[in-house]
Image (cartoon, rainbow, N blue to C red; front, side, top):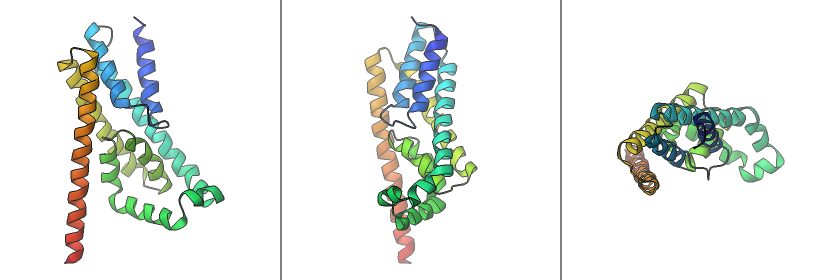
Length: 191
């Protein structure tokens, strides 16, 4: 087996990279890392800590990039074609109104979790309103996956199936919350 330090470095690097290249699934990475704890080479707390901190650091990095250069890009010639000024204004309004909850919920959804932080930066969401929900949601999600895999998974196939089911459940829960919020908003507007 590889030296534990190398395994931790790979887990952390992949978890951070998910924020730049969304097809890299950090939830599967932490599941595999937690599974490797069964062999006594890795510590579950260290796997969780490395993946969580690396993933949040990656999210903060793309948030910062969005905040520093994103607006310039989207006001430029190419950027306006991708996101015209009216849509950029609408995005900013959505983040001002629902940013914290949107950021929090997005961290439970693979693929989506990588898109939200840079646009939060472009929309100039204040640092604490962006970073705290990212860190909290990611900690809850990766902690739950680590605990479940270390406790219940007996094979790598079970890990993959568990992570897949978890993602599906998270998608349904987040969709239900979004629909409930939308219905509440429509009712409030109707009054």
